[in-house]
Amino acid sequence: MSLNAEIKTIFNNYSFDGKEIPVKYLRYNGKLTTYITYQNESNTGELRADDKLRGYIAFYDFDIYSKSDYYDLMDDVINKLEDAGWTYNPSRNSPDLYETDTGYYHKTLSFSKEIEREES
Image 1 (cartoon, rainbow, N blue to C red):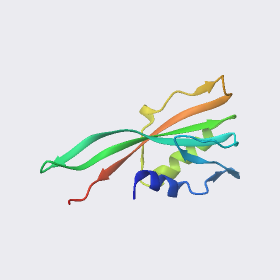
Image 2: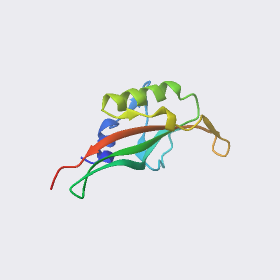
Image 3: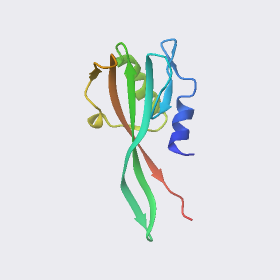
Image 4: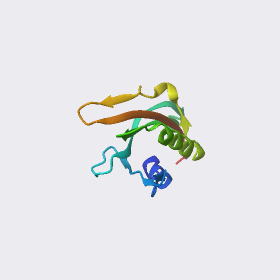
């Protein structure tokens, strides 16, 4: 299963505090005022053997957008991804942001997952 498919499964019909929270790849075009987008930020730590890629670490950014305080939601996202085997990387997070042009509070959370490739 690809990591994007895994994320879709983890956050399928996601709600927090009784509210639906859309979790979408790269963009959200809906009307809800709290949502999360995610994307692959980078891959690193390649493990090679016999001139073939055997594994690496994939880093994903999860961007929380909200018109209000997002800290409890942030904690829930962290717990949900850690429970699914992802590693939280707080040193790679963004600072707390407020986007004056949209009126959204915004925080980027960083997570990673080790990928092992099977021999072919």
